[in-house]
Amino acid sequence: MKRKLIATAVAATLVGGAGFAQAQGKLSGDAVKIGVLTDMSGVYADYGGPGAVAAAKLAVQDFGGKMFGKPIEVLNADHQNKPDIAKNVTQQWFDRDGVDMTVENLNSAVALTVQALGKEKNKITIVNGAASSRLTNEDCAPGTGIHYLMDTIALSNVVGKAIVKDGGNSWYFLTADYAFGHSLEKDTSEVVKATGGKVLGAVRHPLSTGDFSSFLLQAQSSGAKVVGLANAGGDTVNSIKAAAEFGLTKKQNLAALLMLITDVHAIGLNTAQGLYLTEGWYWDLNPETRAWADKFGKVMNGRKPNSNHASVYSATLHYLNAVKAAGTDDTAAVMKKMRETPINDMFAKGGKLREDGRMVHDMYLFQVKKPSESKGAWDYYNLKGTVKGEDAFQSIAAGKCAAVKK
Image (cartoon, rainbow, N blue to C red; front, top):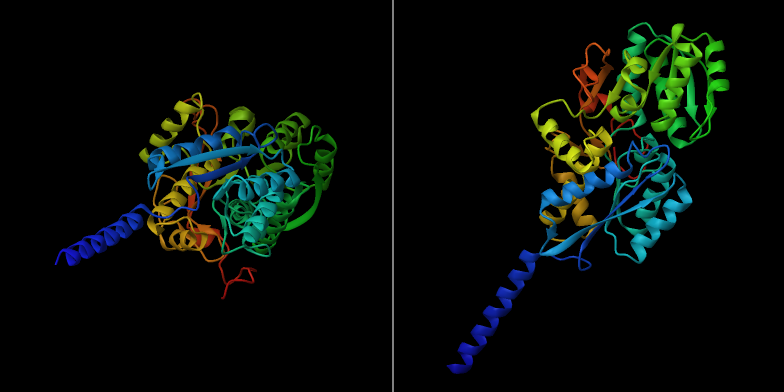
């Protein structure tokens, strides 16, 4: 009888221990490690940079700071807009430092490199700031890669269609000469033509261009009604400022195909007023977005977040909730939970992660306010329309992701 009681007690302890371990979850290391790979000091520093790092840390803080009793760490690195640096940093994170997931991955050339590495290493890579539609098409990585904020197809579908329908039916492109710019020019050209407009040509400029005068002269001589800026960040800011100084805007209209509120802030309303643009989020949309923007401002010296910063927060929190729900940081299990769970937070309502890696959510068409309409700093947008995610983003059926069954 004594031996039987001891055996029963041992069995109960083992069962209880197994239940406790299951409740605690299983992690591959002693911490959940998230790497924020961004441009900390270059042309996209305001677009992502310190704000992206702050957003990821806010997500960890709001999650509670620990996973199954173990710490959640946020690492960050400056890729300097160089894919080789990005690859070296990410490889070190995965192989040596035990990083479980990378987020932000700003700059399309960087994003494509990091996503390919994540696929090779079976590590989750979430792209926020980069916009090339190749990420969920020809270069998709559906088991590990996620494209979260926007892409060149959604940008084209929203602002391109609106401008052509408003009379801007002849276009010339000023294009950043790398993967993102090429995709944005291509996708917008297709939308312009499909909507009844025509494309008169394009000129390509190097990333982080200092002097836009020769490129703007070519755009001006084209006679196009619309000069489409297929660039982003500091290049968009500088090309808009140069266009105003050059006098181009007196005869032609500018279309900022990818422009965030931080760019408007850098340009100023006097120069940016009247521009149409596409965004995935705006800090002043509703009480929930305003509350999060206030929280962000407290750690960023009063600056308001842009849509990229908000998406980094949302993506990081969605990942952490998926790890918790899965009970493990195993890539396949976490990706399954991320796809199964709708995204309902201050960034998106009813957001859905598809099999091809595309996160589908509503997009917005804004027009930059006149100075007389603005109530103060960062009050820059008039909402002109909301486009449902399924209408803004390319459908899976139309996509080119070979790994996804249609």
